[in-house]
Length: 238
Image 1 (cartoon, helix red, strand yellow):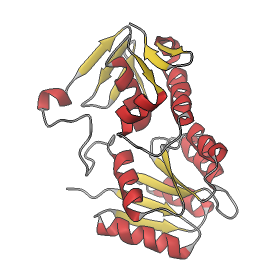
Image 2: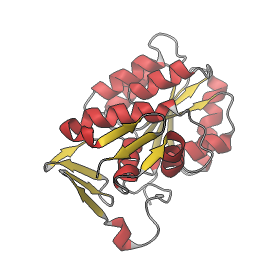
Image 3: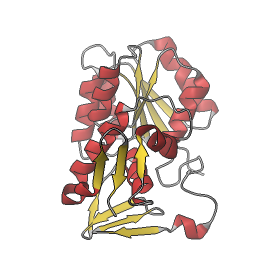
Image 4: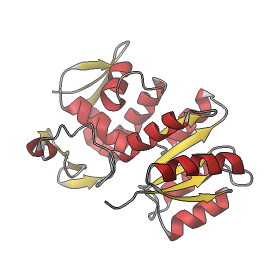
């Protein structure tokens, strides 16, 4: 099995080495850099399967790095897991809004970090971990949801709107799959988090709103099918 590659962007050497050590133990290919400039150059030269990005970097900060990665065609689809010592919702939401997939707040447990890495990589073809959308049934892997002008293909991790492919992050894809799989049903933000990431996943409810905003924008006119139910949550229109 081909090893997944992870780029660790962390200016504190001891943390960078600790994170790299645990990733290597899990069988990942690891490269480490200490600055935003190095991160952009390294990712441009050889896009990794995942980037662990510290927000508090000297020079070019992590949020700027995230924004530039998302605006570069070579790196726009690379999953980003933020590392932050702030623990402030505004920083977390800001990163998610710029296109990051998830975050881990320092200090963190190596087990938690590895779990988050695996969760983010689940949406990638050939990932080393079992996809929660995959129950071991080959037919389920090839499930296709056709609703309105949307086609959602789970096996290909593909979404089409009127036959045109739409590029979604792994989390956006899972949110769409979760809602579209039960059209007309209303789900709270916590139910969506649990359905997408599993129970007791440590992320704020507001992150769901950020993902919904991103989904609606990327789906264009089809985004209107994701309806807000005031005081409750969201549903996909029947």
